[in-house]
Amino acid sequence: MTEAPVDLDEAAALDLDQPFTDEDLAALALAADPDAPMADDAVCLWDLDRADADPLLPEWYMPSGSRGTNLPRGWRRRVVMIIIISFLAIAASGLCSTYGQIVIA
Image 1 (tube, rainbow, N blue to C red):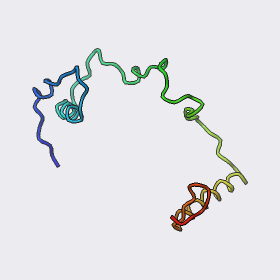
Image 2 (tube, helix red, strand yellow):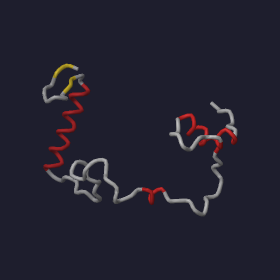
Image 3 (tube, one colour):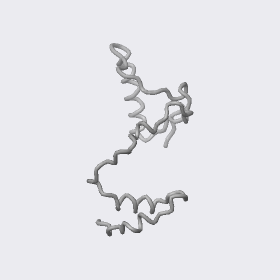
Image 4 (cartoon, rainbow, N blue to C red):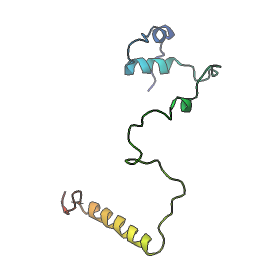
């Protein structure tokens, strides 16, 4: 499925004071040159992520992922695997255990 080429004048005529619509963003994306060199004043996307801004969720609610987590070993691994396999078997047999009681789905 090929799209018709977008006129560069159409993309340049966008009103930057109004919020962009999906059609506007599609027109800009199709009009952009993927091989164009980066501008000298281009800002890194990661620099736009301000560390001092209020996070959407507090750290205690959704902490960032940790590196090198300890995987369970020995009997703990077996318990974890039994729990996972039991939930998969319940779901595979057409039952539902969402609210703690196993019922027919």
